Image (cartoon, rainbow, N blue to C red):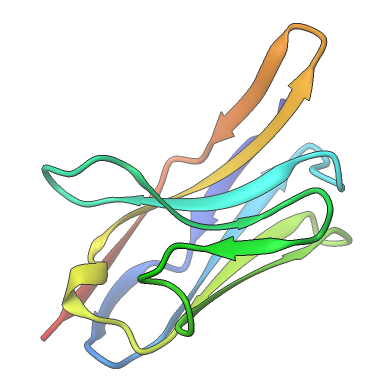
Length: 119
C-alpha cells in the first residue's frame, strides 16, 4: 500500500494551464498502474488518464490533446499536465495507484485537489 498526496490544484482562467502532482509515500515503481480521476459535484468519478505498468498511457476523450500524464519513478511522483482548461474541467482531481496482490486489489487514493476553471 502507498499513501498518495496530490497538489497543484487551484483557480485558473479558461484557456490556462495547471500541473498536478501526486507524491507517493512508499514506492510505486513499475508495479502500480497510476491514474488520475476527477469528480464534479453531482457526477460520478471518472477516469482522466492512466499510466500503466507496461508504460502505455490512455486518456478520456475530453482529455486527449490537452492533458498529459507522466511519471517519474526516481521521484516517486506522477504528474498531470493540463492545458487549454475549460470550465467543465472543474472538479476534484484524485490520484490513484492500483495493483494486484495475492488477496485481490491494492487500490490507493489520494485526498484530492480542487481544480476550478473560470470562464
